Each structure stands twice: as C-alpha cells, then as structure tokens.
Length: 544
Ligand code: GLC
Ligand code: CA
Image (cartoon, rainbow, N blue to C red; front, side, top):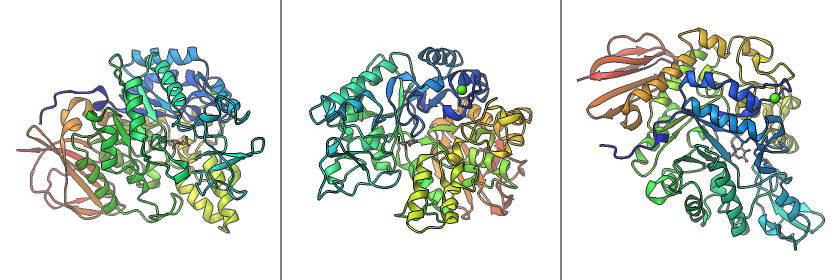
C-alpha cells in the first residue's frame, strides 16, 4: 500500500511528563516547568518528538492537577504563564511539540464556575454542573465514583446533590449545556493559539453521559460533541495538531468511531485492553488474576489488525495511572534490564504512535509501601478506607495497591545517585524509590548497553524505517511464552521475537536470517530451532 498523506503524529514518538515528579528547580520538593525546561536536552537525546504534559493548570491538587480551578492559568507550584511560554519555545527549538492534557469531564470544586453554581438554584452557572434532587431522602441513583463510594455529593445549602464521577472535589460538567461546551472550546482555542501540538483528552468517553439512566461511558451524544469540538477548535484549517482520547473500555469498533479520519473526531485513542489483563473479569482493577502471555498476544494482534485504515493505534505500557511495566509484565529483580528492553522492543516495533512514560526509558520499577500513611494518591487512599470497612485485611489491600496503585508511577524521576535521585534539593512531595542509586539517568547514559540506549535506538529505527510506521502486522504461531510477529512493507520483512518468561523457550522460523536491527543480548545467527533465553528479544530483517 502507498501512503498518500502522512500526518506528523503518525511518525512521532511521545514522552509523557507528570510534572509534579519530573524535576524540581527551586528546592520546594515539587517538580515544575523550569525543571522540565532544564531537561529538554535529555529528551532530545532520547529522540522523542512530542511531550504529553499532564495538567499544569491552576489546581488545588486533590487529584494532582486533574482537578482544575483555572484552565487559563498555571499552577502556582509549577510556575507562571511566562514559564509555560518559554517551555513551548524551548521545546520547539528541539523539534518537540507540547501536547496539553485536556480535563473537561469535570472541573475542581474551586473553579469559579462551581463556586458560582453552588450559590443557588437560580445562579447563572447552576446548569454548568449536574444537580439532582434527593430520591427518598437519599442519593438520586446508584452511580458510583471511580474513587470509591457514591458519585453524588450532597449540598446542604440547596438540598440537592451534584454529580462527581471522580472525587467530591471534581464535580462533573454538564455537557448538555451549550454554554459549557462553548466555554471549553474557547479555552481550547486559547491554548491552540499559543502554539501547542494538541490535546490528550482526559476520560473523554464520559462527556456524553446520561446520569438519570446511569449511562456514563459512550453516551449517545458523545460523538456529536466531538465533531462539534473538532469543527470549532483543533479541526480548523489553521491548526495542525494531534488529539488522543483516553477511552477506557474502547473496543476496536469504538476506537474507529473516534479515529476514522473521515469522521473528523480525534487522531487516536488510548485503549486499555492490554492493561486490564491482570484483572478478574467483571471485577475492579484491584482484583488481580495471573498474567497470561497468550491473552496479551491476542489483544495486541486484534488491535494491530482491526484498526486498518479507519483508525490509528496508540502504543503504551505505562502512564501516571498504571504500575511500572517492568514490575508488571517483566521481572523487576534479576532480569530487570533485560526484561525492560524486551518490553520496549516488543511495543516499539508495533504499528501506531508510541508513548513513553517518564522513567520507563531507564527501567524504573514499582515502589512498594508498607503502610497507608506512605500513600499520596486519592484513589488508593479511598480504596483502602472502603475495603477496610468491607472487612478486607490491611495486607490484602496493600497487596492490591502495591501491584496497581498509581503512586508506583508517580515517585520522582531518578536522575542520578545524589540525594533524592537529583529530583530535588528539598524534601520530595512523594518518597523516592530507594533503588535510585542503581537505577538512574546518569548510570543509563554512561552505559552503552542500558535500557535508555535501547529506547533511543528504537526511536531511531522508527525514524529511519517507514516499515516500522506503516508496515502490516502478522502474528506468528509460537509457544505461549514467546511473542513473535512480522512487519511487512514494500517487499521488506522484519521479524520481532521476544520471550516473556524466566525460562528458556524454543523458537523456530522457516526463513533466511538477515541483518539484526536490535537485540537485548547477542543473538545466534540462525532462526532454526533456536533456544530463546529468559526475556530475550531481537529484531531481524529477513533475507530474500
Ligand atoms: C484520568 C486521569 C487520572 C484522573 C482521572 C480524573 O483517568 O488519567 O489521573 O485521576 O482521569 O481526571
Ligand atoms: Ca519546584
């Protein structure tokens, strides 16, 4: 197939920054915009071409910036609008675009709109949010919050409840109100006019909700709103930006609704099927079941094959809500580096736009805690309290939190072996993983065989080989623990082979061994009946 039109985001590699934990520049223990600016050279060395910046807007930080009190201002701890503009300029100099986080399913309860709305039923802003009368002196219905308990909070003054699908301090906006939509679009245009590279859209699948029918995700008007947003904001001729929607529960069919270019909605979505494979079906993310490589293969192959030309994949292992991948699907003990490289190779050779989450490129691991007092994340804290009341033991709850809790991804970036991993000269807002003396950027840069250099090479391979961007995908039939696939493009064939286990497994392919493109240990010069060592990975171009 020949590609007629290339969008910059189809060949891009993105890097997610969670600003609070990335780099502190002024010793207050909190990462900030100047800290990010000081690390742009590092990101340029890695080779990424875009940054997804988690929220930097004004926020009381009930959910670390995902509760916004002013969309057109910067969080005090992070800096000023001038710092933000400097970041845009400095990033651009290095060929890096800045993708902003768009959190418009809800605001903070400290946003001016909500402060007004709370003043009474007649207030002009009342309908910016979702208010309902009590039913039988109780909550309007059984909608639950993603952060435990009911999604309805009672407002004494008016005797009504308001909806919050996340924390009480994150009231849901009423998207059925045209004024709300216009305010959001105006705000988006304000940022687009500053020259940002696009938006990552927080829980965007929820904006079409119908609370009275207890419909939250994929509501009937969702796509209508997105089309309207497209026309009114980023879809305008003068912009050339990317958009990626966070869509929990998306199937390939649903993903095509968002990302089929003909529909004028989004560039791509994040789907979470692979990250949910460790959950007991039908239960919550905290109820763990053993991982099965066969299931992972099925999910990846499905997404690779089914989007076709009607959509575009996003490729990610990690983000600020998910545990560290090397601790989840890899082995973060004796095979930490090797398995981190294997996971990188597997993901980055797929078709789609890859996202790297800060620290993933040096193989950072989960950070277990032994007491609830060590936790910062509101989701984990609420879960702890809820499950204690339900009779779970402290150990059971901490097992779930240590496996899946969001703080695992949020501990400060490990820059070097100095105090607090070089993240801050002050007291970090969240504990630093005690393994920072071995796992840090300085070590990785100094070692040509490090995890960092694998990521760097993978990004380079993508930049230099259209096959990586456009090639077709073909899963190979192998033993369960071996995940192998081919990419095919204009007569070229690449074979990607990975072993997802602590044991050796056999592999055999009937084809001619060609050039090795990347590997995580030296590979035998043959493909016939070779043993794959634990966590081994290599990519070879097949000879005709
Ligand atoms: C998204 C964010 C998460 C946040 C939630 C509410 O899932 O990624 O961090 O807590 O939305 O905004
Ligand atoms: Ca700071």
